[in-house]
Image 1 (cartoon, helix red, strand yellow):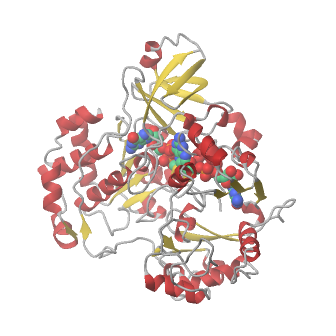
Image 2: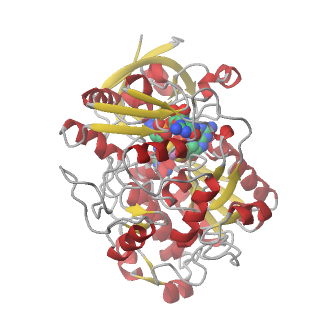
Image 3: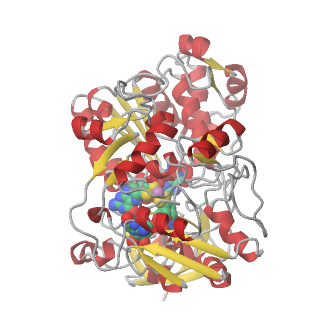
Length: 553
Ligand SMILES: Nc1nc2c(c(=O)[nH]1)N[C@H]1C(S)=C(S)[C@@H](COP(=O)(O)OP(=O)(O)OC[C@H]3O[C@@H](n4cnc5c(=O)[nH]c(N)nc54)[C@H](O)[C@@H]3O)O[C@H]1N2
Ligand SMILES: Nc1nc2c(c(=O)[nH]1)N[C@H]1C(S)=C(S)[C@@H](COP(=O)(O)OP(=O)(O)OC[C@H]3O[C@@H](n4cnc5c(=O)[nH]c(N)nc54)[C@H](O)[C@@H]3O)O[C@H]1N2
Ligand SMILES: [Mo]
């Protein structure tokens, strides 16, 4: 259940991981540190390279997969939309688009064409830092590489323009007819083992399991009937809470702000450590301190749990039964290896017990299997994903509506969910915070191979911790000279929101003017510095861009 609320990222992969190895002729990897974040997927990509597939990597840093790439360019963080527009500009002006696919399966191509005409390679070279000829080379390689897969991750989504960035990936894929075919598609490489499953099961503010809208009367009636509740909007203040609410809830970032406005007085945080992972930590601390009642359900006493009024010890993956759904919509069984240690209980047991104490009915589940049986009945895309079939087949990919359905390896074959695929003409917008004289560097943040997020688990492992025991900032060789590093080992990094002291690594692999800090280290937390500005639609924070200064200490 880790990451229940951390639903960052958008949608699922359109295609399946094994297709990378067998079908893809070209990979456009943008904003994904594939070898460190998704090493098994990176292995498939490298196997495809051996049979001649081309790898293009675009990233502000020459990460490990960047070193394997046939084509690599670094660029200025946050200039992604401009880059996609320029790639499409080249493809259209050189006639490399898939005209038949565009005519049969898409709409609004003319509007896209008119907009991207403005984004010439020369203009976007200035915005992004990728040379104009490089942009042409990338565009031609992708357009001629069918089936070509776009792989992206948080480098695309964690921006105030995250949704625009994601739409840009599908614009490009549709332009070249790379949708609905094996080895193609747009493939967000999602994060935690079960973040996909958490979203599928309604761990989002606007939907019930299976992305069924809370605002739909029909949907609410269905769930109300199954749970013996009233389907109408409920009254909370003073009245008994029966029935299902039709109000769209808040996202994590909105909840924290709401504690400040007194709109939220109690928080129940489960499998998340916002005191390290949320942006602008000084603000987060302030918000959590103001919360009248804070409950944290975790497997360790994290930085967040230490602030809680009540800590509920959860059982870890090794101590429970259930399923995880991975980034390619594949549902797999997890089986109990050892009994929960100490007072720990399975998360679902804790929730059911609490619900019953609050007077709710319908929480009398005896096992994870019994919960799955309810899911089969109420969530059409999981209708045929039963424990029995998972035992027999090993895994199933949704949509899988019935027990005689084989599951779905790739989406949008022959037809998009909405009918025609829509092109979105999108103007480039600058990130919320840009460097200036006082804060001359652009900070971007992310992950390392040896640690997982807030380190609550990996930093408790001696072996993993010894690989990278300390926080550091990555800085370009020339910039190190510019700040007068002179062999010094420690620096202070300051943004408008706070400052941290940490080690430093000098490298050629990061673009000049950019610094990178892994966010795994609570004692020098990158998120003290980051900006909490969010995308207006997805509400994802701009973890990938803020302005900082770097000084020798
Ligand atoms: N070892 C390990 N693996 C993990 C995790 C972990 O913590 N540790 N976490 C998991 C989770 S939950 C997730 S979400 C995934 C995340 O996986 P990734 O998204 O691959 O990881 P990140 O390090 O956040 O960032 C990806 C890349 O984005 C680049 N980037 C920075 N700024 C920009 C920009 O403006 N535009 C673009 N296009 N790229 C930019 C960074 O340089 C980096 O190479 O990893 C999962 N896998
Ligand atoms: N600066 C910066 N910040 C970021 C990001 C970034 O790229 N840069 N990435 C963002 C992203 S994509 C993500 S996903 C988040 C991750 O942020 P978090 O989800 O806050 O980070 P984790 O360390 O994975 O925290 C998960 C918690 O769940 C606990 N846990 C593990 N298993 C279980 C279980 O079975 N039950 C329960 N109850 N608890 C369990 C762990 O001990 C841990 O404390 O960070 C975000 N923050
Ligand atoms: Mo994530």
